[in-house]
Image (cartoon, rainbow, N blue to C red):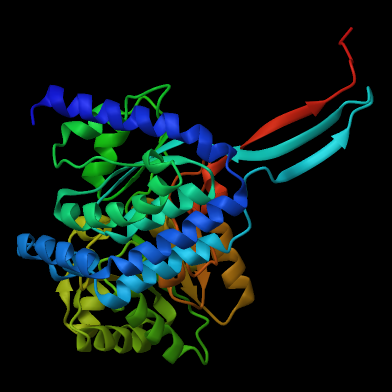
Length: 419
């Protein structure tokens, strides 16, 4: 497919999604709930075709790292979790039409501020096929149409999932509310992010290259779901929490190293470095983690010396950088310089230290004495997430259905005119 053909295809998909947005916007919440339940059923019914398609993607992705293959791989359990997430989204309160505030003005006009859909969302993402069903379900819950553009490494998987999702929508006459750009052509991204007046918002999820390509090319608003360069800081106040700190470090790095809320750097206060650094590093190495450290860490553990680039690298693999921090403030400064404002964690027995850390760290998610792996829409009770925003406007952190709405002022009068 040449560039002109790709551009025409993108234009057609986006315009049909735009047309489908109106009936979805005006559809009663109960009908959208029923659609979501039907989509969950369709995903379960299409399990084998989805797994077969995913097998073709895995066969073609032999060069991917183990962590990236884990992100791409679907199993029966993961397909079931996709369906369960759709049902969880269906059970959430419908955000559309919800009154945020209301009052009667001095002139007798009744003023209300209501949640309404944004319109047409464009979601561009890499690797993880479950984003396909999560994004579609969240957009339907919030009354939005969506155009999906997945990565070429998951093309077969995404296609099979979209086919299952669209069947109930087509039966309801809104099949085009979920559009799918079925091409690996990278020029499609450039075409899609410049569709002012047709697409209202673009949400990119992926690596630095994708985020940069979208933000540099887009002429429509962007909410970035950028790199997850997450940190764990072990404070000097660690009395009674040594095992907790070690367990959190192991879980946050190794439970699923290829996801954005896995830690990439561990910082340890100098007052507890001699007893905590060897303990944590040994536990990580036993789990197959390649540890790269600063001079003090290397002296304590014999680890490989970290380079300047290591502190700025999202490994998405069984690799972690470890450094000794002179103070809580120094640890926060390291995070400010090298982090991506995604998720950070402090392990401490001091309420004051925890409060200081949460005040100083300007990230979307801040954990106290729990793993960064909890930075997730499902864990937050959102059913699923369309991504974890590292922006500050208009949404931040895991974005659920409510975050895919904007608001509208509605005024009801009885003939008032302004003098």
